Image (cartoon, rainbow, N blue to C red; front, top):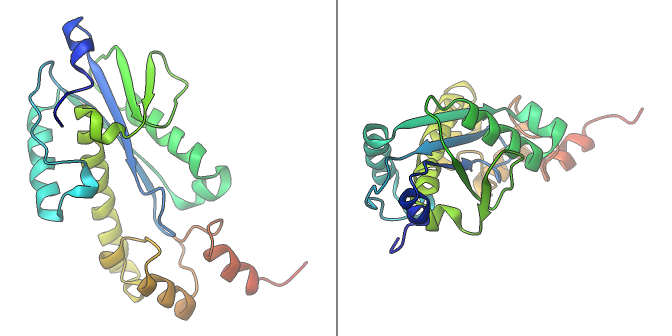
Length: 203
């Protein structure tokens, strides 16, 4: 991250809340959103966004973010809500709740692509690569979601959620076909929807 998107706002004395999520693509588990406010002029300290970090690198980044952030807000939207309102609306809901969870005022909101109905929201392409606050939010959301999926792995070990975290890997699809959907699978997502409809009798 050579240039920080927040810099012009910091130069004007404005605080920025970066927002991102983890879990839009999986077939199972919740969507987790995070909002992070960093002190102005924080120097870049991440090697990249959460997808480019190893699990151990994410854990270390998570520790540093908790030490340096002025405030961190988080929110979780479960699979039932995702099925009811769709993944885009669930993403917006989680992001707005993460902002509401912040314990520090802010002036500007930067998101990765997703436009929110909040004041002074700027949705930028590849926000988790261009905005340090967004990148930090991405890391926190990913770490927290992984921990949730490891918890679900203990409840439903037959799906091996600890390995694939609910994403549609070949192994996950094979186990889904073998065991059918769990209570945390998203029934509105293909191929879960196709499998669910196959075993649901017509009215």
